Image 1 (tube, helix red, strand yellow):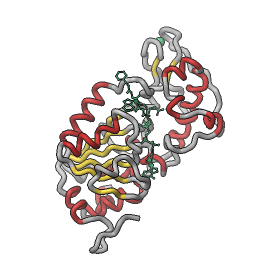
Image 2 (cartoon, helix red, strand yellow; image 1 turned 180 degrees about the vertical axis):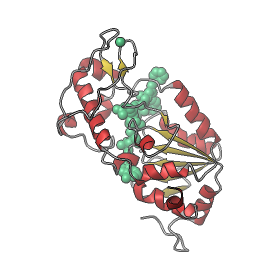
Image 3 (cartoon, helix red, strand yellow; image 1 turned 120 degrees about the horizontal axis):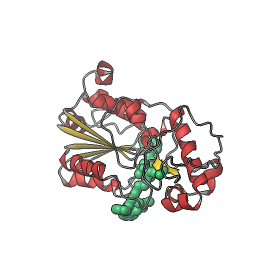
Image 4 (cartoon, protein in one colour; image 1 turned 90 degrees about the horizontal axis):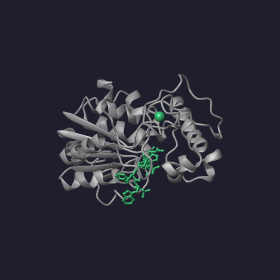
Length: 267
Ligand code: BV8
Ligand code: ZN
């Protein structure tokens, strides 16, 4: 799984010590942390009705204006997948880490609620939340009917509901490409990245901005950067340690190595 260091330990002793003695840890996650829960990443090829579309093209205000039923259908299909999914050991490890270090800040690019369902509190959602729709026109929050939307495997067009206040179309509560990030969340993320002494970048290709700036900001302010990702990314060059494994295996193992008794004792 991970590069064995010369003493045969799974992780370098220096890295384990850095985590064990960290004062403020930031965990930055991307779609890869939810991959083992069966939630497709942005890199994964789109399937069914969406196979003909590039995700970054669908996730835009223009795409919604041009074909609201296509885009709303896509988000209903993703929401169904997330509601059927369960947090995996990586989400559980992030939640357990909060009890092992003096201060933990969880920053995610994911619009799913798997960190929260695993027990993480105060998660900073840079790109919004699938479960918080609102009116595209007047911004009035809207509530989904109870239950998992019954979406066909291959997806389908679904006309978005009308806003009870202005009859405008309801949109997903996510940040689309070309839209600014929520100001408070972004300011909190910037402050945490600049103030932490160790950042774990987990399951992100670090290609979407401004979120992809956070690891560099952490390194520039003296933090140790540890990346967990089975593939190479643009972070390989700035990370102090690259752990080329699946988050659901690597992160629990790292916690066990760093904290006596690891997760079990705290779970
Ligand atoms: C903005 C919500 C302006 C919606 C998302 C600077 C340079 C270049 C471009 C830009 C720039 N600044 C801005 C831009 C434009 C754009 C951008 O970055 N484009 C990219 C494509 C080049 N940014 C924007 O548009 C941002 N807004 O700039 O607005 C503005 C400013 C002020 C006022 C008004 C306007 C908004 C960006 C947010 C867009 N919304 N999501 C939705 O979900 O539908 S982004 C979305 O894509 C995700 O949230 C995430 O951020 C990104 C996908 O990246 P990842 O999460 O990393 O996932 P990915 O699939 O790519 O990779 C998965 C990784 O996991 C892989 O590396 C894989 O190896 C790994 N993995 C797989 N399995 C596992 C694993 N790892 C561990 N364990 C495993 N088991
Ligand atoms: Zn409205």
